[in-house]
Amino acid sequence: MTELFIQSPGVFIAVVFAFALIIGSFLNVVIFRLPIMMEREWRAQAEEIAKLPATEVPKGRFNLIVPRSRCPSCGKEIQPWQNIPVLSYLLLGAQCANCRASISVRYPLVEIGTAALAAVAAWRFGFGWEAAMAVTMTFALISVSMIDFDHQIIPDTIVMPLLWIGLSLSLFHPLGGAETLFIAPQDAIIGAIAGYLSLWTVYQLFKLITGKEGMGYGDFKLLAALGAWLGWQALPTIILMSAVVGAAVGIALIVFRGRDRQLPIPFGPYLAAAGWIAMLYGESITNAYLDRFL
Image 1: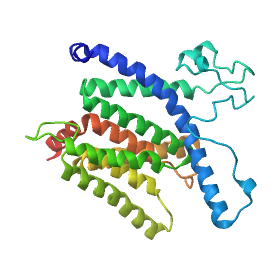
Image 2: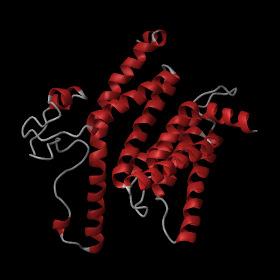
Image 3: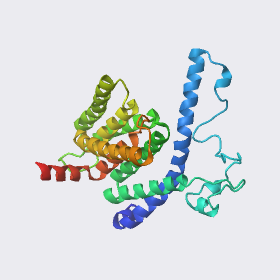
Image 4: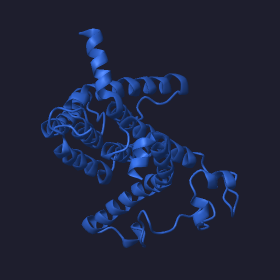
């Protein structure tokens, strides 16, 4: 099988695409349930500390596995075949099999998007550990982006393991300076520190000047994780791309959709997108910039 994947990159990419479709279906569960799990944990802690009534905290097990998924409209348990990525959405006609309530198109879009981005990562790095890690990072960044988009939070349960995995992978950096996704340990450590402190500094300055919080601590941790994976050298590219695109989208929403400028805009999706692009082509982007302007 290994030889087949090496000799036939198309087969490898197709397998990754199919696998990522399945993972994309699971990511839909993560995106929906993890914020609820976090809220339950916070409320349980508040009950313990502030002695809130027990009814404030929902009872029963609730995690990424239990209970089984149900239709949010009628509560009917979703059958296994109805969870087949993309295909079940098409077979059901985008409706619940029981009550015929509409199923959001976002579910198949997340599945297809996850598969497409994972396939691109597999194509970029080819069969091997680098592709496996790049695909893993892709899954994490998609989850973080969607949760931050929905709730303006970046879960530590995703971003902190991502940080430590990035630092750990630097131990496998090859000698001799070969180009690889696995950067040198010193670059990973400096990248994690610089990633956190750069946005933390911006946050403190913005708060000092305006008295408002311009971003959350989850953004600091996410950039620290990206720095651990990609090195401090990638941080200027990530910050510049995310800031420019984020500002452009924010201005467009205010001008064309009348969005209240006081409403917060999640920065995590832009950091994640910029980090993903930097993972694939960061060095090429940096070199092109330096060649053009220096």
